[in-house]
Amino acid sequence: MARSTVKVKHLGIWSTAKFTSVFCFVFSILFLLVWGTMFAVMMLFSMILGLGLGGSKGLLGTLLGAGMGFATFAVGAVVFVVIYTVMGFVMGAIASIAFNMVVKLSGGLSFDADLETK
Image (cartoon, rainbow, N blue to C red):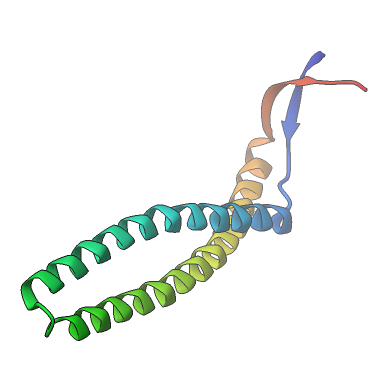
């Protein structure tokens, strides 16, 4: 591998925005897996508590509450993923525009890299 210095003078706005939107999409799905697991555990405990306190009369209320909780979670999850992905795209575009302006003023960003030749 050859070691050399690379200077970045421009970031593609479209490619940066695409990258950050995909990153935010993947991150939001991983976040929802954790959030969904915690939600399922809380819903289970709520159902057990509701059945324990309400007996057979509380069964309908407990099931309705669980159904409403699940529906709210599902809608919120979809909205969260969509908004987070769109905001990732927008913020990636804004960040690349700002980066390009700063790099133009400063002359570039240098870093060392190991380049592989094939």
